[in-house]
Length: 184
Image 1 (tube, helix red, strand yellow):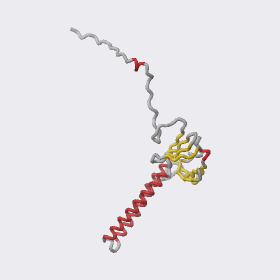
Image 2 (image 1 turned 90 degrees about the vertical axis):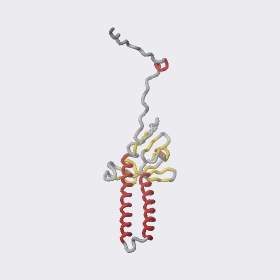
Image 3 (image 1 turned 90 degrees about the horizontal axis):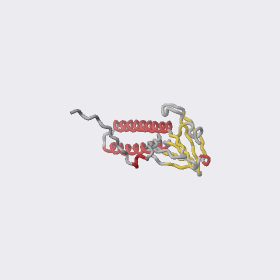
Image 4 (image 1 turned 120 degrees about the horizontal axis):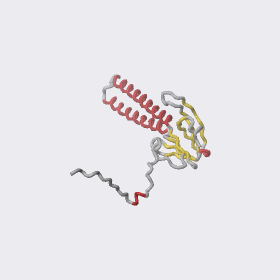
């Protein structure tokens, strides 16, 4: 006996699924790692964060070279192998570590990861994810303090920008043109 011909089978969809609109993918996250909000304009601060990271690495390299040089000098000096010298090097190492932490922290926080403009505020998002909220752009004073050309520390121009509001002025690193060309 021959096999019967395959029979087509139609699977019925449940009525609830048949009337649903097709699903759309969720909005993609932007470069700063969060979903875009309506009415918010965000600019990612790439070159300035690159400059801050490279500056932090340069700072750590110079600090490590100084520490190693002074440690070698202390060990090679007369009486360098004594217990007192070892304790001094441990204390000096702890101080160098504290300087390294503070220096890297300050270098990285000088360049916000992004800036957001809303109708009521200007928000600077740090590399740690914290937000510093300023009034909307007409309510703050912005001054370009210094321009850095492209080079070893960053591949694009970077500006040191002073932002003042409510009697407080702070200086940040931003990509060139963030506050002069691209703000709403």
